[in-house]
Structures are given as C-alpha cells and as structure tokens.
Image (cartoon, rainbow, N blue to C red; front, side, top):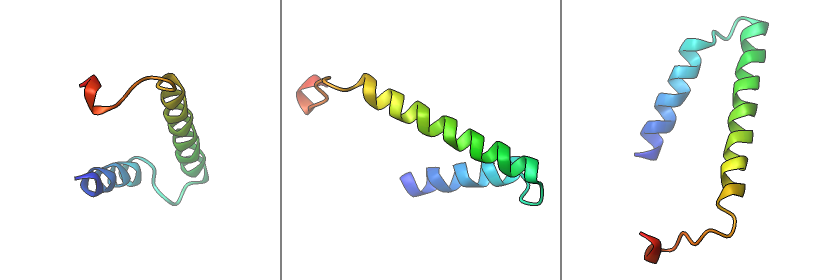
Amino acid sequence: MRALAAAALANAFVRIFPASSLRARFLKQLAMFCGAILFVWLLTLTCGLDLSAGLF
C-alpha cells in the first residue's frame, strides 16, 4: 500500500514538473524541501506524546 502511494506521489510530481525546465527542477526541489520541513515539524509535535497501542 505504501509503495502504491509513493508511486502515485512520484507520478504526480513527474506530471506537474517536466524534467526539461530548470525552473521546474527548482520548484520541485523547493516543494520537497517544504515537505521535509513539514514532516519534521509534525514529528516535533508528537515528541513526548504517547503513541502506543493503548492510546487508540
């Protein structure tokens, strides 16, 4: 399931940003960088939060 979602996301990036344009490559890298920042921010929000099976 995760591989399918990752493939769908990769295909979406390929369709949105054509590989021939330098501007498109820059925007793709910027989008990935912002995504990484968002991911790290979400991880810091869960720091100290009990995410064990008992929580759910």
